[in-house]
Image (cartoon, rainbow, N blue to C red):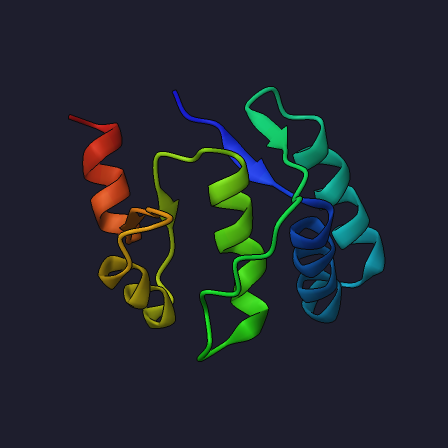
Length: 105
């Protein structure tokens, strides 16, 4: 089992993107479902690390992982490979295939 860590800012981005392609009613429903899942944990961010210079908008995901003490940040976004070169704060990055292998070991 795993927990999905989110912040209000992350949920707002998901909602915005889903709304763009599927309309506001679908995006609102999606957000409502996500917020009420047992394994979704809301994280409060108290410090912005600003580690993602190539795409500063990605910092919200890194900060969430750090503040939530995540074991892994799962992404297909190549910008996050930068985190593999940073020793502190440690954010371990997996792509979807690596995460799937980890889940089904």
